[in-house]
Length: 397
Image 1 (cartoon, rainbow, N blue to C red):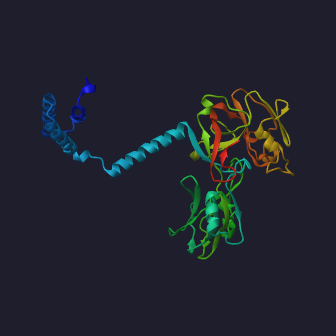
Image 2: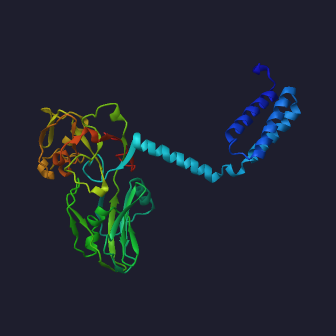
Image 3: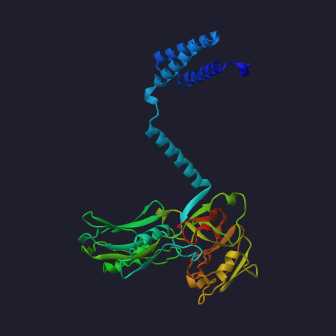
């Protein structure tokens, strides 16, 4: 029995299994001479096992391992190849998690404030750059201090002089392009740079008005091309808060129905009154789920009534604790649709339709403006605010 087999014979049996497996796996790749040499060594191993020649088995163990290791030197894995393989597997796993389990999103606008912060900015008269302690605090709060002075004299290029880019998912930034190819990087998103940080005003330019029917900013501005810029000219100065980053649970809605009052994410596809440029495709919005199929909703500012009763869920109670003129903890109640260019204050939802509303009701373009959200658009509940490390960090309620 195997239990009473001497240890050196057990080791030899395992070596025999290993070399047999090596031959079977590599038979088509091994040179004929090497294959013959390894098979000859295997037969010698079998003979030594039969005669229980301990010294011969020890010698064959070393020789078989040496020959097999050198049989295919070109296929020996390198450290670089190992690292590339690990990175590739990690990427595949991450993409799978993102596609089917949880996906990160950045809050772009202020429609959910103060529950979740969007990207905001404020201009300052002086250089806002902090000291060392301030830099550490700014990192964890995802705050950027902007003080950009031109290091170049020339004219901006005529087409798209200002472009927006993104480093990882935390850091949107812009590049200012000159006709001679020179660029200046400004660590701010484009919308905030043009508006709150007043890049257009610093360049003494007339903005190009763009009628973008976007969720929380119905009128945009852009930078005209060909503008002259002088070295030493102030371009932007102020503070940018990059907004909250959240993880969205993409699994739950496959196993349960959406819950009234939770913060959820959905796509803009099939919502005709949300005009997204074709080149951008479908976008993702985040709001609070105010109405389920069959619900009757009625806004009586600052209250929200659902099916004839004042909304009872905790999320709604937070919003309704204040009024427009007397906010409580930043919440100002629910406003009428007319305040955001909408027409809906009272609605009875059809089957498979959901009603989305922002907590910042007086500045939220939501279902009151562009209608209901089809069931097929639902992505999942917002689960966790993971960045920045502020009072919003943690579970989203």
